[in-house]
Length: 275
Image (cartoon, rainbow, N blue to C red; front, side, top):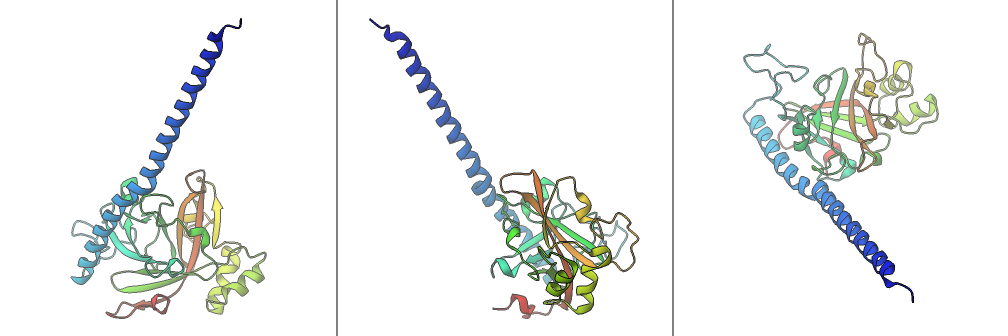
């Protein structure tokens, strides 16, 4: 007769393996729930508090980007006087719906990005010539930049500061050549800006791209150009996030150029935010 012991041991081993796999699966599922759901709750609360504090400052006629008395005084272009995680602007992306609105905070530390999109403080400020660069999470923690890959040429990125509205337009996406890129850019930009952003030092700069984590040139004053003394730099904004979802192996990058500014007047918003 065959000895049933080996078969019994095999069944036991299969059962133990199955239980281990189920346990691992449950743990992974719980981790995903934590990453996507629980961190979203915490970040939503932190974002709401930061946005409320920003609104109170603006209502009081204060600009968080004005240096404190211990600083150099005046507007600090690199937010050196701002405490990490302090909100100083708001970002609206109309293509993501009328309810898309995030307070932008100073810094890109883990703690700052728990609150919302964070300004790379070594880059320029809103509206300034150069590159106002902002990072944000793509999964969990509010996921403010989850849908960056959906942006297309000429989509608006609208910032509010203490005194201004700033309307940026996404640069040409997937244009096969400079002539096509310029034609696309002219759909939303002045002929002069469209030419500048698609020729010379800016030629080939895509509105949406994927790069390696070490490609920090994307937040340079002129992305990809190491010389900081380029005359007449265009005012750009750059958004960065992890790519693909649930991974940090690459970075998704959005580049946009300033189209226009408008004063912030009570009861009025840019046309891009109406309706």
